Amino acid sequence: MYAEPGIIRKIIEETGDTWAVVGLSANERRPAFGVARTLQRYGKRIVPVHPRAETVHGERGYASLAEVPFPVDVVDVFVRSELAGAVADQAVEIGAGAVWFQLGVIDEGAYERVRTAGRLMVMDRCPAIEIPRLDRAAARPVSEAR
Image (tube, rainbow, N blue to C red; front, top):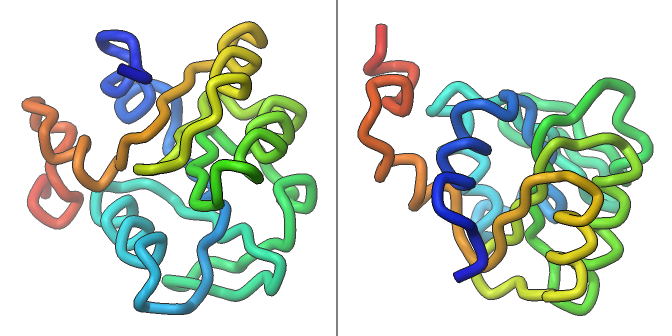
């Protein structure tokens, strides 16, 4: 419902491999921790973005998207819906090609703003669920693709 046909595949396969995961901390019990690990298994570079700027899964963290000193292709959002719109706006500001709101994260106004800005947008979905659904060999975990 919150992703046009083909958008999920395009984000995963064509947008780029650097994914900022907003809300990712070193707390292993949080869903972002496991999703970030799955993204890494599928060849994505994760960039933890959290106010505590923790290193997670071997990647240095940053307190905000604006502090990330290199280009980000996709911003994966693990914050409450009422905070997600501001994150989406920041993603557009830093030039990210796509914004991905996780399961349960819904802000229809942000969805429209991101799309109006010419960026790809998915809402209320999880890449850790969607990536394995893709039927191309490129979507296999890096460890299996070799």
